Length: 458
Ligand code: AMP
Ligand code: ZN
Figure (cartoon, rainbow, N blue to C red):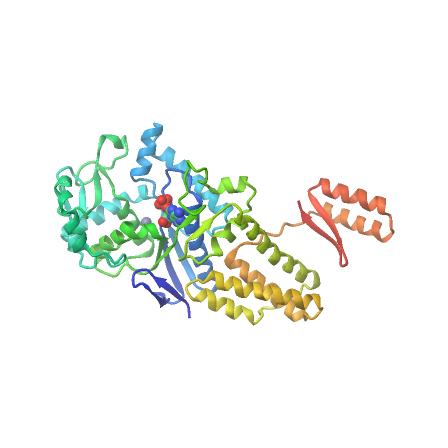
């Protein structure tokens, strides 16, 4: 039984999709004012993992990830750099897409940009005002009235009455009914430069929270299955999303809220001054492969913190190598395919079904790798078991995505290898060495094994 920890109910619950066989999934996307860092990608990789597990179980997944291309941070950057909003956001959106690709993150079905949905946001805000859930302030901003939603605070277990008591003193300064009320629409200020839209309340721009309510509903409908983000998105972002969405349409909004824990670096927060603020390209330049980055991020449970250090690369490399070399050994022996798996696959699946327990799934998998290697050493593995094993590795990698794609060997290299094989049979060692050298100069390493020549790309 597939079950996930639902942040809303604070317990593990069986996953039952609203529509049989289909999963409607929304994941909060990047704010495109800067290059996304590896912390952001921990969350995006967790979401990729969740999606791959759902796909492996045969669900049809409709996935939407928004692009936050207007908010306080994007506007600040635009003004600082003297550029237009789209010049800034297009640039960082493209970088983000490149990183998604590098990390083999399965593409979403839709990547809506907030600036393409402002009309929908205005419409939802109007509905909220009409229903008495929102009000306009003197400067032409619109705020959500949290008092009007009885369930406010349910996601984060916040007691609003207590919060209101302690913050009441500040209330007047903001001209709000309640200091916790949040902005749905922000009236234009000079520091916004030329970023503004016309609205029934004057010139301004949407608040961040309303963006995700409108974009998720536009593609997934008023009520959908799973909404994800990092833990820092829980409050206020997701709490506010729930409030405004439920109040706007009077239906439940999302069935399951899944949040991934933070990625720490060197035991703390990443910081530019400490020199440990990494983006994906920084790690690639330091010699990490995308697969090693995936392994580091996915080998911890998504609900526990991961502490990233550069030396984690060694462990990731060694683990991936263990899988790859078993795959090579199995491929050496047989090419028979079967649509069957070793018994261990069911324990592997059980671990993943239990709230995506990756550490446990990996323990099961590596245990199988070890026993399979032992059986191979003793020549005790049947052709059938080998074929099942290869299927298991392929299944494993559909979910974890940590093995590099096998590279097709060009024909001229194959010809050189055959020629060298012949030279070796004729004990012409000089020629064999010369051919090894030529093959090497073309980017391939040839290794001699008891089963013949093996090729790997450099
Ligand atoms: P942002 O671009 O700031 O909107 O963040 C994009 C996603 O990254 C959100 O889901 C955040 O919760 C998540 N996030 C930000 N920092 C971290 C971190 N250090 N570890 C894990 N997730 C993070
Ligand atoms: Zn969001």
